Length: 271
Image 1 (cartoon, rainbow, N blue to C red):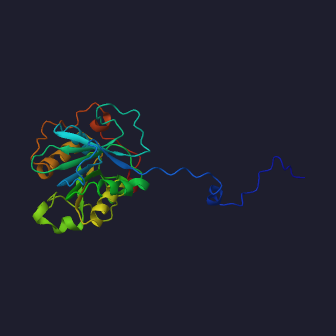
Image 2: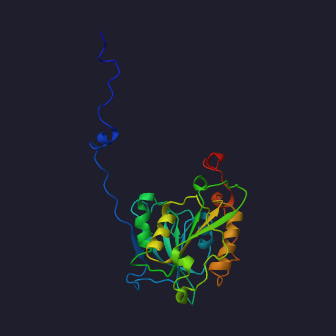
Image 3: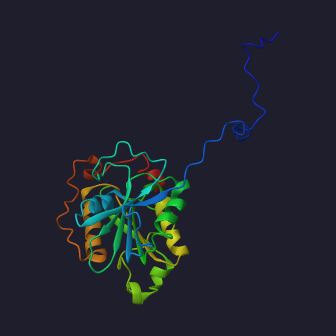
């Protein structure tokens, strides 16, 4: 006779999704918001150029530009403020908005130093390119994810590619923004490769609103050589009026900027 106490129980008659119906749902997250230092800023802000830095090289460069003014922050309820320093630091989990001190045009720079989940990317993109910030032109700076790249990316070589919205390719509104491409001469991101996350959501937002948008992606994600390449690109094509020569080539105490790291995804199985 079988021992009902020691025999394995029969498999559940419920599927996993059915069992989830009995669990208490997690409370919904509050919507992200923009918080400006001026209680009543001139709304909307209409910068001639909005730069959104997502990659480590671009974060490093813009963090060390001294001629910028903190004007606001993007607040995400899931990102705690605890652990952040009183002064802006590369180690903070923050998303600050700066105005570059340019006498001719207003240029805004957003330093995204926290991880944005895929589920929140569209909401964040709508805030940064929406009713409160209406840019004439947008530059998004991100890094290539090797698992999404069609081809082999050598860890000891540097690459930089671009993607553009239809308005940027056609040079629409040339009387306002200039008819030339923002990253003229740069190769396009290879066909068959994939970009996702916040960078893709921001570029899609530009496409929907017919804004001249450019997405610049670099490789590798860390290292002094890629910092030097991105700095040269910004100096030559994007911010010719700013002196970036005083910014060191990532001679920073943080190891995430001074070395090229090999991640589990950086293997031949994705090439």
